Image (cartoon, rainbow, N blue to C red; front, side, top):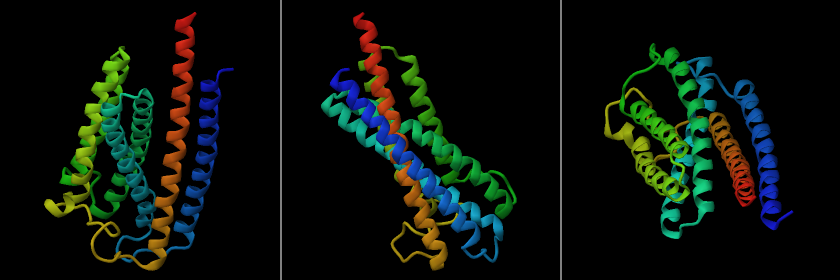
Length: 233
């Protein structure tokens, strides 16, 4: 067994451990959110979807930002491992985006009376999701490793540019989406019990993101090694 194969398997094991820890943490957060946080006066029990929706949105935006940053490093260093890591982060970002784009309309239907509205934040978020769906489609369509990595890096950087606009869109445009309650210049506008649950959820999704990315990256390394061994034969 080669050192590269051993290293890839160690990465996979670390990813599995982190993923399990993240899932357990997320489950604990949801128990806290349901049973130990107050019910919001105007929105009622539906507001508790917030403790899934906001951490998933956080995880998705972090994942897509990492894709862009790692893509910049790839174009500079031309290291194939960076390309694999960026692709892994993109896949995790899409998974978190599906959670965000599913829980958001469920919550919005209760609060706004509509499943969807084409306001700035929702539209930009949906556009970012489809941009990274295209990112993965591009990687599947281009067979040459070098071209695939370069083209993907450009798309990843485009996604990075969108991330801050999504966060700032509620300030720049008139929108139904509420303004940030946490990532803003002033103090958080939440009761302490809700704030603790939100921060715990964001921490859990951060661990879950790291676990998923490390796991997927390790599996990608294994696939590359097996593909290389097959070509050698």
